[in-house]
Image (cartoon, rainbow, N blue to C red; front, side):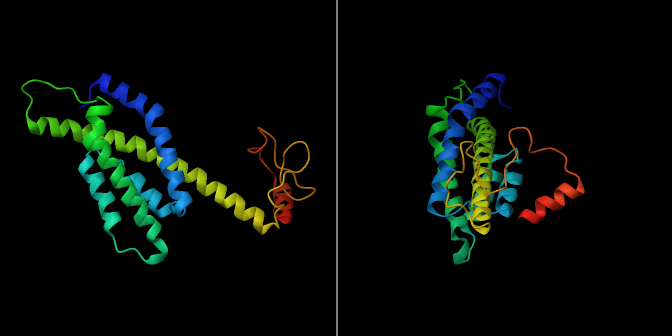
Length: 194
């Protein structure tokens, strides 16, 4: 079981190191192919719930080694890159860069391996959750671009001084207005504009 000091350090690493690395990891993957589909996001998210790193690692290598059809080879590439990143984290960064493992005299190899697995499960969970969050951001941006093209788009130009996009006569809600309850008539009018 990780000590409170190890957990505190791990959470700090999550915010300061793992988050920017996860964003860069997912953006690179999306530039080279495309974001992960929702089914893969949910499967990977569920696998991170494992308390044991070997179970999570097995899930990742299983997905990497699947016989993916050509149209889904980007998923195989994602899991290949993820496995390489986590392997490097496990073999090098956990001890030498992150300094999460403490050398305790008299501790056996099995105890050390168990501590490493517990810490890697937590590190991997933090990293993967950041990756999946960035994947969601990329999917949302992709969906917004698809909607703009379907509406006829405006060529990516912004209208007016306010920087709002859309067709003439259509305005996006300002800050704080997006969650306003709409009655059936307002909702119908909104749907008719699309």
